[in-house]
Length: 80
Image: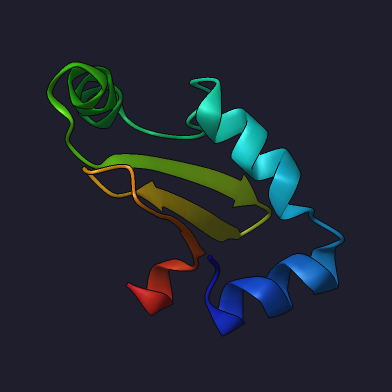
């Protein structure tokens, strides 16, 4: 799933959601600080939410997988 703003941004920048999803699924969480990376590592063990943040120039695209793994959403920070 992706927000309208994220879809528009990815379309303008020729970013495919599948590339981002592949990175997210394989533990490339983009530009996160160390505490957020550690939280993602813990989330893999304890079934918490997983966050990725990818920078494209001055803009960010976030990807969030819910704790129950039922859905992953691509969004811009302004959509949160």
